[in-house]
Image (cartoon, rainbow, N blue to C red; front, side, top):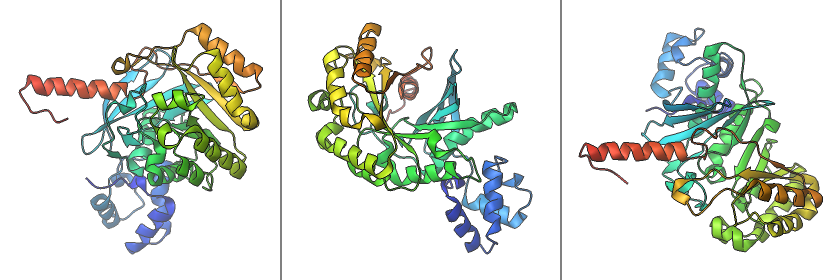
Length: 364
């Protein structure tokens, strides 16, 4: 299948258009058809010649995703399972927030980071998503609202789905450039957050990017012993290296960092852990924010359970008293496959059972 035209930035599209012997302004027309009028086929681009539409169709596709499953929660959260052209599957989540519609996108098929509590990493990384496949997730959700004709639009993006975004850095930056373009989807940089498990070189590179995108770091532990036990990335980039990169980022950007902290009962949720975390962030507290996350149990990781409300509140109170900005994340989609990667894992397991029942070879 042809690559998705969503994967090109405006300058790349302009370069391709002129290489085909067309005037540069044709790129602006295509861009408007894609992101303002949001057409789903090249044939709908009525101000382009038939010959040029044929060239576009022969070279690119628009949407590379096929919708497989949609789960809708009572709270308005919608979880999508999309199939890629090579039959791999990914998840995307729409969350209704008080401030607008937020979409959580996936950047890789599987994940190699290996966090021991996470459903995303149950299936190892198969490949990176292209920039077009990441953009298409936003467009699929937006098209849903366009069809309803109710005027709603995606206003926020979190790059926190399956995979490690900074392990797919080049395609991530292209994606961010496309969705942030002021003459396209125009999703503000301050409305976009990228989450990383702590890849130090990429954090330093991200600090130098011209985009003013928010950064979140999956911390989940206040010391190396606990963090290495639940996140193998800490063996490569321990807290000392990670916090040095954080200091560099804060100095370069003066932008606040969010630290994500998933609450695991008896593992990282004690008051002593909260005190350690407060000490770790004390010198950064003016530009840091801690997001305490209730754990969504995953059957494959049954050694973990969610912290009690009392433990979460005690942890929160300890941080607040130490002057650390923090919040307990509001839960979304608890009546569907809430944990990132769960829906994909279930669908793959279902397909494997079907193939076995039909006497077909199952590829692992």
